[in-house]
Length: 166
Ligand SMILES: [Fe+2]
Image (cartoon, rainbow, N blue to C red; front, side, top):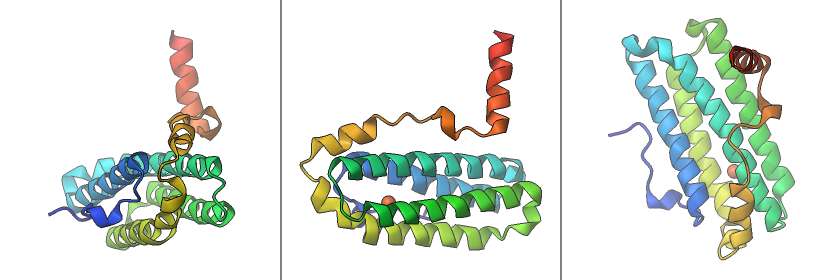
């Protein structure tokens, strides 16, 4: 049994959002598996990066959908997203500096509880606003996974190297 199992009680009634949540759950499960397996230690950092990137992407998609339906508590919801993004970035940075400084089980429990509670309470609250509103989905679909503004310096260097080599 996976560390974090998806079930229908987590569905917010918007397939695109459910699919995003399933990706996040699977990244949390991957993080669990890599932390459990000493041979996979080298990949923990990249799983944390993927989790950070996909979290940012998903939150932007969700917020665009909320904007499209004039969701009244979007500012508060946005604040919750920003806080979690900062926490994930902080965990990733701390792990990069010193893997021993990160308590894997604590991080996993935190991420699982956060996502589960956030979906069941805050995300579920927008369900009636988005059901039967295709413009919400279209707005979310317009968000590209890689937003150049979101790339950090290291990623920019990598991209420049690729460009120079062409
Ligand atoms: Fe959310």
